[in-house]
Length: 340
Image 1: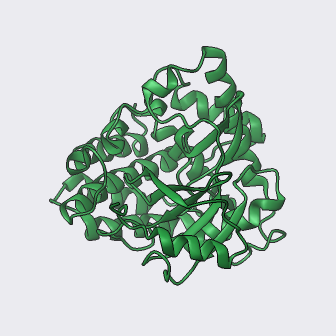
Image 2: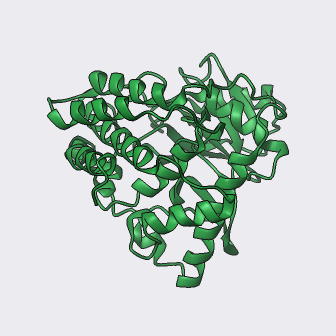
């Protein structure tokens, strides 16, 4: 039987045993997602199941697939009211699969990735899980990160300024052509960085397909997943990115008709207002945060195509994901200039 890319089932079985997991029967592994981010597998025996995540096998970019980061934050959040899967084991050195890998318990809930998936939900379900998305994000941002052992998880001071520089450097790493709007938006962002901001744990990639809904109650989130971009930073970057993901062009980045771009979900403005009401806070310098989110997504789209050209299996449409970059940069320029 041919092994899945990036997987070594016998080594994984031995690793689970070393970490106190007694297998009931043969360990089997299925690929859940080999797409835009880390490789995600379902490993299971006759009675139990786990999720295993590791970086792609090629086309890596700096810090974009940080499994140690994902392990640290999900472990720390076990004691909070932010829903996360129970952590099982972490191969920090990559001895098992050739790259660092995390193992958590498998949750049999529902993941809504595509418009087809969304068809299974009623309008009432959609409204309920939207409200729950906002509530859970607000709860995450309210976690006392020092109290859960994440005081050194990041450097919140100067976070948004570093984000501009980080994604500008990332562009230089992954760009497949020159785009003048990238430099224009970068320069405007650098000139408009807020002098101060709030600090919290940020997820870095928050939307409907990065949570697992409870199977019997799609208005409730069983677990938030995909934490490899999490850090300590400005909470407004999370909600701004969540809003910018709502643009239809995001379909090109994901390579599918994404559930989150469906008009069944509230508009970006409505989501921002919901978050503001939930947290009881204003959204200062909001146009800056929307522009930064567009800048980041434009670079991410370019990076997906970069990895595809480097030979990484990044899923359908990866080679054309960069076609969205120009539109994100243009949207970012409109936002920072206060235009619709």
